[in-house]
Image (cartoon, rainbow, N blue to C red; front, side):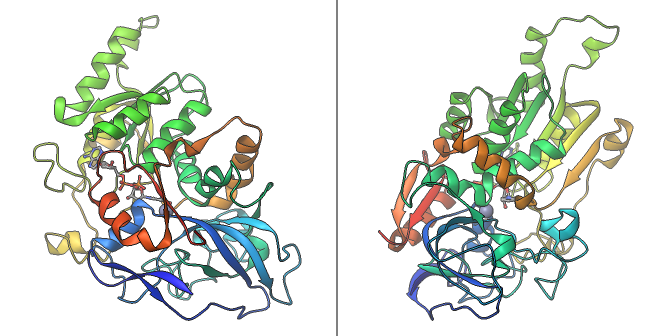
Length: 394
Ligand code: NAD
Ligand code: ZN
């Protein structure tokens, strides 16, 4: 079969690789109809992970089941399914409590597993014609309709970015009426803003410096904040002042936001020099813009080892943080991978009921062979390259 293979920093190739097959009784074999490129794939692409050359990439995967192992009971050939990017066994100490992002058995090396990702176990990725699905009963979410129908590009976003954006809002405990600052207007930031609005937030600010991404955020009802046009914390507070009356003593001091969602991660660019990285830039802004007792959902990735970091501690993923400000303000923080399976059923219901249409995000639909060029455009964050989906059968 053909698959997208990592060939070293800024080099992806579409190559013939060995066909996957059913290896364990619980496995299924999936023919991939749509697979997306993720901002997380760019960390590998840029040589900022420990990924090995020759690995098949891709963790946002949907398609049609072609074969199942003897032990699979709820999935059959012909089923249309989308896979959570995390691979979970379903029966371990963490999975049985809903923590599918921290499965203790799927990956022998650490408490999480995923398709085609550095440090996430020996599983091949799904930017390919076929992929092996371990623990298929647990990891397949069945879908209505037919392959390639009008919901295909909504459903593929259930593999990662829609649930991950939603998880950011969940970690930040976004409730009806809340005020929310989202850092990053990439796919995850867009989905975090969209999820916050679905949950009833009254004001959602989205911070980035890419004009086309800020416009996309504005198109769904968020307020765009360009961090190159002044301190984003001040910009948000100025905007808030114009909208807020002071009805309780001290309310005028709560001029920031109640919730913040970090959707950028360790490659955050510096406000002083957007050509340079400042890994804690957004975490510095977040604590400034949050009101006392505010909540932070951190879904942007921080990875170690990072062979491309500037200094030794950063290579190990250790950074200085304004922790005293976090403590003084009594900020609650939640972080980590999204347990996709915890949300994907209900987000699918929203899509099927016409209450959510996350595919507003999808800007490019390409054949698998166009993956290397698509990686270049998405990596440069070229204007309008919001989210690429690949169609292996095209
Ligand atoms: P992306 O990397 O393109 O999005 C990042 C956005 O942040 C870009 O638009 C960039 O311009 C912007 N940015 C850079 N520096 C900034 C700054 N200082 N302030 C504000 N914005 C800034 O793609 P993405 O797919 O949205 O991924 C975002 C992050 O989410 C990545 O770190 C990715 O690995 C992570 N992620 C996490 C999970 C999870 O389960 N927790 C899942 C998927 C992706
Ligand atoms: Zn992803």
